[in-house]
Length: 317
Image (cartoon, rainbow, N blue to C red; front, top):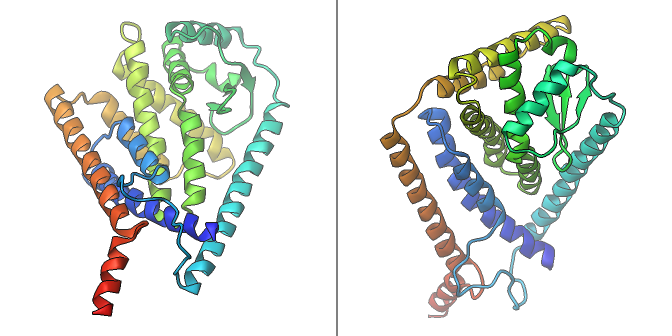
């Protein structure tokens, strides 16, 4: 049954990706290391792309010899995938329908600064700016056709330098396709819905996208906005968001402040180049170990099943 074989493949990917995720979470949450986005992307790939030994095959040509409970687990997994994917697709369709009803932004100051920021980032056209009453004064939406959602009345309280920093940040997200990558991770989480490590890594991936965006935005703002001004723009935006959410008695929550604290620390603290190179070398070594483990594990548990053959031979003796 192809469904059972697919489930076995997903369990294998979940194990390899989960072990890689444990290392990533240990480094980022316990040791407080700023991980580069490429390392998180490698973790995403390990959840979706099997790294197999050349001698094995994904699907066995032999009749299945799995326990009936495994077939039932495969069916439950498939039902969970359908439910999670249906939920995500429904939310995206509703969000797209809501975007089509949003009026375009008419604030000339915002439009002018957005065009300047887009030009400085090498974009030929500026994404559409739409008015929205969301809690966040500015955000982006649309993985394939990105738009900026803005509250012009709230953003008018920012200075030009703060607006330039905020707009450059959001446009950098679009330039580096962070939202599209997060939607891909959503699909991975739907497939690995039974694995809590996948969901934790998805949460960390969003933070890594933010820090990656901060680093590239600051490079493009060199000479016009300092790292201190950039950090103050984030704090001002957080303050305005807190004021808006306080009116609805929601509050930003401890997690938002924790993420912001970590971001500000990485913006204002420039690590020594040798530390960055040492971290990159260590992360590359961990990735190589993960690939070797994945290939060796597949050699033992995929067709032609040498582990099973050894067990069969010993039983016959």
